[in-house]
Image 1 (cartoon, each protein chain N blue to C red):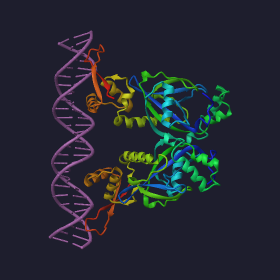
Image 2: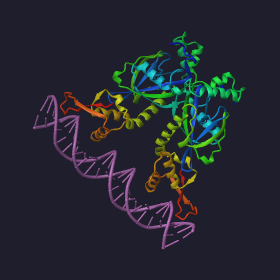
Image 3: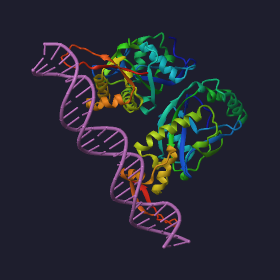
Amino acid sequence: MDKFRTGDYIAQLSIDCVIFGYKNKELKVLISKLSYGKDLWSLPGGYILQTESIDQAASRILMERTGLDNIYLEQFRAFGGPDRIIGSGYREVVRAGLKDFDPKKFDDEAIDWVTNRFVCIGYYALVDLNKVDPKIGEFEEFLKWVSIEDLPEMTHDHNTIVGEAHKSLRQNLDEKLIGFNLLPDEFTMREVKELYEAVYDKEFPMNNFQKKILGLDVLERLGKKYTGAQNRAPYIYRFKS
Amino acid sequence: MDKFRTGDYIAQLSIDCVIFGYKNKELKVLISKLSYGKDLWSLPGGYILQTESIDQAASRILMERTGLDNIYLEQFRAFGGPDRIIGSGYREVVRAGLKDFDPKKFDDEAIDWVTNRFVCIGYYALVDLNKVDPKIGEFEEFLKWVSIEDLPEMTHDHNTIVGEAHKSLRQNLDEKLIGFNLLPDEFTMREVKELYEAVYDKEFPMNNFQKKILGLDVLERLGKKYTGAQNRAPYIYRFKS
DNA sequence: ACAAAAGTGTTTTAGATACACCCATGG
DNA sequence: CCATGGGTGTATCTAAAACACTTTTGT
């Protein structure tokens, strides 16, 4: 990628993505360890090309990181609080780290561009964690799925952003039937229930939960899942598109 | 105000405000007639100072237009669709209009700044319409309260923005008890009901509506309102802060 | 036959809606 | 005392929650 320039990208405006996944009964978020500085974590993000809409930018950024197209994606709010204005605790360490990391690409002008005050637009994405093969961005050492319960402290206000994304997800999960984006193509009712329990951090009784989900009439029943366990085999379901 | 410069304001990022008011059983929006071009209408908006948060910017813009402090204000979403990118139908007419309007202030640089591609962050505000004495901005001929039912076609995607604001208002009205911001300090139950009917464009039976609102336990009953009509005098209520 | 968990039916409760009635006010 | 709309109580309906029970599977 070339140097960041205002001719190509909108300055002072970024997109941050909260990528949700689900595994081992836990709601997880994909976060990145930055390759400069030490112990700096952040959300995957990027900038907006002059020629694309913000939704397109978010899709593109997600495509670059996950390799997945047609991901469920939702804008949930913009962040432009005082902790994003000049003087944020991370600014100087990031500037030093960038310069150290690649002095050619990050000349003074580029460092100014990247570490300027930013407003960011938050998007959250729901993906089938097993289908994702995370690709690191250019400032990143590695990407990692972390349970939403034990996220590290991240740069800027990224912890707040995850919190808001989580809140928004909870509000939309019921009414928009988006939860199935977090599951594999085929799943059992118990898995759906456990997903909901992970999102709401609250238990649901199986029978009532099943009644409610089946009542939505969005699932089709396929066969049975014989696990070898000494109990009745659960049905396998698929989401009716 | 000085010429718009990136040094002072964030470039390519604006705030547009949907200011809701309520009168004559109608939900109204404050819109402005632009003073250049002909028959151009838009939402009141502004830019973000480098030194302020986006919430502060929205409050400031609202203060400048309504003279009111402590207004109920909520960010509802950001807009950066393709109709906001270069080539929008209004771009050329706006450029010509600006140049014509004030050639000194709007030199080529300033016109470029103002008519560049913009991403905007939408806020909606709820105000007591009677308390507002609208003040025109510098490109505006006058401001006007218009029923949300018969808004004119506005520049850019401002009609879409109002639609989204209205949707967001409907979602929040119930759970956040924000509707009282649209009413005078003192009001009758019938007025509350009619406000809700205006927002939802749907009728509510009086007795059940009253039961629900009083059940929220947020109103205090003051006296009675003797209108001179030959019927029982309704109670006057006030919102318990 | 038994343990474990899936799956389904019935009762209970709570909240919303519909219906019916009485009350205050001014002419 | 009557017309008008304000105000309140009761019955009905519906959907969620609680409870109880049967069925399937592998050992």
